[in-house]
Image (cartoon, rainbow, N blue to C red; front, side):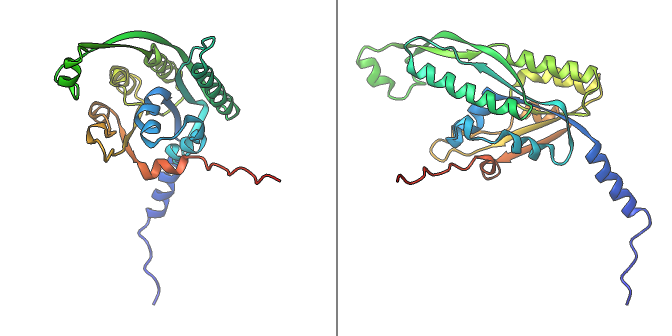
Length: 245
């Protein structure tokens, strides 16, 4: 018995879908600081041990990554004389930058700003009663914060949309400050925006679970949520030290 003949047009339609996917132009925007805190820190993976090239190919999913279409945004560490920790951080960051540049990544940086913050000891703090008994009413500490990264991402999204450099912008960031810009990109410039979110569970403290951002889910054209097992595939294998002679 002959196998049934597929309906006319099915093969042609399937070919058209595949061809459209292959010719779709994408540009990838990774918020490095956001990615570190939501993913790498939770997985206990150093930035230098994550394969961003393979990750970019994975989220592009067969689509064409345009020239200058792999973009990485990060706050740069300040080098302090006599501060070995800062020196190590600068060395690691320079290593990351060198690796990304070799693979034609566009790196956009912003200086980390030191900020003095104050934590008042109240009911939100665990063991607050014991701390108060010891006379501790507040804790002052210095924290580094990125400034202007979201502005740089928005600027690049706008310029590339106006110049018609991509069909779909793949945004790897859960920063809700990007939402107004995404609305303009989609409705005024008629470009698609794809949101890459993450779902990573913290068994010891469910409050620290990484989850996708609802506002970015509802305001983008395509949404993908990656889980820990998928992300582990992009962790570089650590080669063992050769045996000493």
